[in-house]
Image (cartoon, rainbow, N blue to C red; front, top):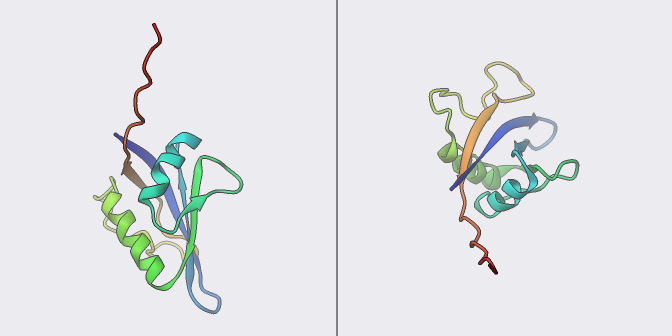
Length: 109
């Protein structure tokens, strides 16, 4: 089973570089199920449907590699941190995260 999320990266160029990555899932349960597969991410404070990470250095490179491997829009060859169209934001992207389906509950009837 896979859950789909729309993502966007914001560049922070002041001082030491870091990037904020937001992944928006269709519902809170999907975000929660995907969280173990996305290193460095945590639940969003403003939306339970979102996972957010603010990363730099090796942590950013690891998250970027993981996200690029999950992308479904591979025909768009721009990496998620491309500055080709904006110095503030990378291109929007879509990922599919494989999750383990919850165990089926047994019916009492």
